[in-house]
Image (cartoon, rainbow, N blue to C red):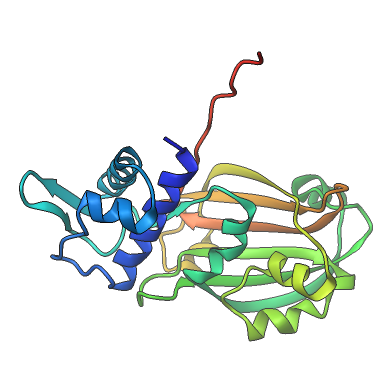
Length: 245
């Protein structure tokens, strides 16, 4: 069974549920129908459905089928990523609402925390990200840091709120994201961020810092997002390396 394949099946089914294609109370297609639909094995389909079960989205009964129980994963938004392409397409589910744009010169503490070059000029785009399908609470506070040379991307970010800024840099400047470094850390929500996200100050959250790099290692952008702990689940898959020979 290919772990990436079942993750993609689970992601598509999850999007079908959250978008209303499979409404609450309805039955998902049978395992055999899903095998035909996605051209995968029965083991892959079962692994995908198990992921939906873990999120509280569906229930499974013998001789009845797989029933949709909720339109959103337990614990809020669930992000399952298997490739850089899927990360760049993240905006399909969320929409950016820009709150502020500022220019700054990176000091030593900012450079160390974010992996920037001390003394260099950068732009910071601060945004709230919301679910495009459901009129619900904000999903996260996001700050994207990019070299000042990419200033033209700011207007594109306003015109295309459903696209990740690093992806817009690719399109506008002909760059290509080859590597994304991701750091996840538990934090407590500060008062300003909690207020923007309509959450309780001091409550648990997750901070994710992502460095988007080209093949030669050059930094294209850095994003820093803070999610309330009860609104976000990050799914990561680890595959064991096969022994050589």
